[in-house]
Image (tube, rainbow over all chains, first blue to last red; front, side, top):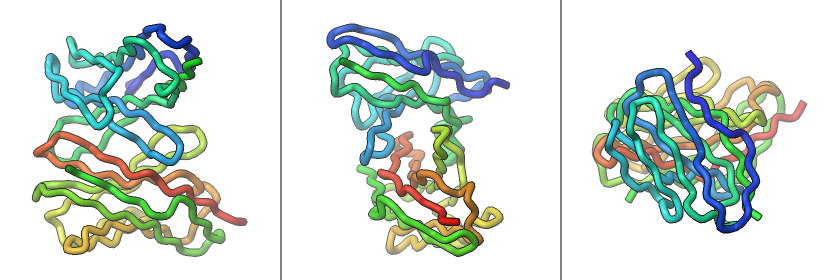
Length: 114
Length: 114
């Protein structure tokens, strides 16, 4: 099993550009989520999904879109990148949305917006 | 709303000594779970320990144990016989089945001194 994979590992964007961060898991996990990690702010939840076709907003959803057309994939779209979106982004998955299951994390994507 | 607070941005411990990392949380849900995750310099998030709120017994995993005080909403992590490999950022997290969300604290950076 590859676990949770994220691409790309690094990305530099100019203000106003759009892009998609890819996330995939091969564990047939029901629950997937996106976080951003900023110094002194920990991990903040952007969006999450409790199953294919079902997504919802987390703590900091503005400027980001998600969709979940398959169980395996959960891409994060930046619509019009801003310097405030410079961060490290983590995708995570867990077996189900309930029961306090362990989340498995991808290796992260470091995004810089100039 | 759920909140998780880690009031110690940085801690140091001598190798082979014991250190305790603090975490407090707040949730109105009765069904919740608490976690400690470790993030070494590689950036990969790793589960350290997990506690079900309905269990009174404190969770332990080898050198890692928790002190779960439900009434005080406190969930501290004790690392015994600290090793150089324990140096990392540690995040406390709370998951409630009712909201589907995992909420993380801001993290504590642990330094282990040889």
